[in-house]
Length: 275
Length: 359
Image (cartoon, rainbow over all chains, first blue to last red; front, side, top):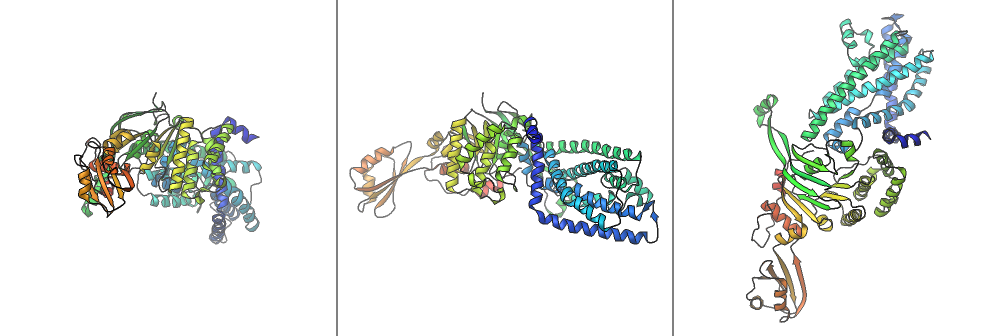
């Protein structure tokens, strides 16, 4: 009923939703990737858990974070990564390089919107078939303390959505660079490492040396993993939560402007130069 | 109003020049050298609604660049374009809803999903009502016999099947103008014929204006009333196919197969006074070349038929292929050369080196 209504009133939105659905189905079709993904994430979470356990040793807390909180952080960060991670940069770069991006301009829709929706379809797939069951299993195996307040859960979901948006924006920008430099393979690799490292996935931001922490606080990466992770493990609470959410929103807005600008330049280049 | 109205259209590309050698590479790091290439150079043409127009030229002549400007993918350097009443690169989204495009070398369908899913998605993208979509799809599917492959993913289709699906995809929203960039490339003769027939019916039924580029001149012969020929970014011919043949097809060849041995001298005697040229094929077969302007075929036939006993007569028209090859070779349709035989120069290599492919 609802989808029929959307279909009639907002056919384009319905088309975008369809694009998302199709990507979801595609992910279903390529399940092998999915199974190998489970193994990789399981190894990562396990490895970081044991690493942190060794680092903590006899200590109760480090930098005000207990081992249980740290374990929770590691687990939730990796699971969140499963949701927000996508290969939009690679897809866009490939489409630019083989010229099929031109075809996208003879369709009455917005290319970047299509890309975001595809990324979201992928994200939803992993959220349902990967993150959720993965989180249940991890909770059973590792000593993890989940938030008890449903409001925190709800807020975490919202923040996770922003993580996805911000990460996708960075991906899109990296991908679009293929318009300006012939080979942005190295750039995409670097981006992946930078995001994993600077977002706090590997080490929470508070563990960085003071100057690095300050620098990272002025970069968008922390908004991807560290901020939602801190809310989830409970090191950020009370009014601070809204500040943290505000930072995410702010980065989303700033990056939107940047993406828009790069997209405009890229389009001009395509229009004038033929890609 | 014209469906397509182009005036003084030009497109210039800046192409990076790479210097040679290590020293050159170093220089390139700091100062890049650019060459300017006029891909399309001051062309003007109008295409009326419902017309099928062939757009031909060598590789790199500027065909694709023109199509890209007409579809709004590229912005012209100078000149004006009006397609369907729109300036293509402005109001892009509104404009593209009224056109259909097929790039023969590039799939527009989603690779991994069933064909029908792609169609349904396109229906939404182009905002076609469910009812229109159904009627339209039923008609197209039946016409192109796609019933059995609708649920298959595109990557599992043969090229012929895929191309038919591409055509359906480009026509679902009933566009008034259809751009086809080499729609029959790589297809077998059966599918080619089928696609030509299909395009023809679509054109007649819906008055769809069609502009197609192709290297297969049979496409042109089967479909187009009009040809625009491009060379080096300029239009070198614009007019009917028939006229092109008349101006450029310089003559006719007639092959006689006689009942018995013949002598060439005897034949030459028979056609004395006519500017024709006999040649011997074998003992019983002779060939005569009849230049178009000076002699006509019936004169020759009337002189030979009564005298000799003939088993078979074959009249060979100059093929469009030959005509076009000759025009490409000389580089202009304006100059009319007098040579009778067309030297089979393979101009591909030349064309390739001239070609600057732009995406």
